[in-house]
Length: 197
Image 1: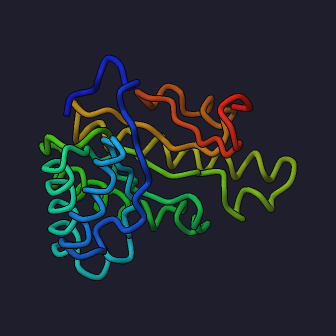
Image 2 (image 1 turned 90 degrees about the vertical axis):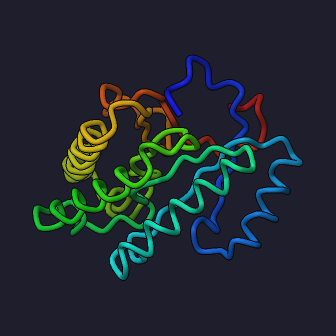
């Protein structure tokens, strides 16, 4: 799906089942979503499942996106989950794995008509690595996370120059550090009512 001029028609939901549920359950739950007039889903990808069996992981992921699209629902896959970010994920040794993982996922989905956009990472500032750090140490760690995000966005763009890229930031203030890397600004607001947002 090429980037939209206007995303206001998107009525999305996070689907935690992702690629791990049976086809029957997926179709049933997507049917529920459709009856609520929801038309896009955001799914967390499991790097653990990818590590165990990349081919099976990519096959399930592609089947999910195709099944969702048949139900009239686009998909925004989340490549990395910041909630479980481990400091080792930001080190040199992890970079080669991350590049291969991104390459495999993007190449598997970039031509899918049901792909809404790429979410490079869910809530990169919402983890103990960032939250428990103070002062200059926190700034240094946040910059390290942003370096990873910039490299990952760049890798996605090089592999898929058509589909939009975003980062699902926790707070509006987090967006500023990666504003040049994304097509769509995304932050999660957990306030209870629209008026407060």
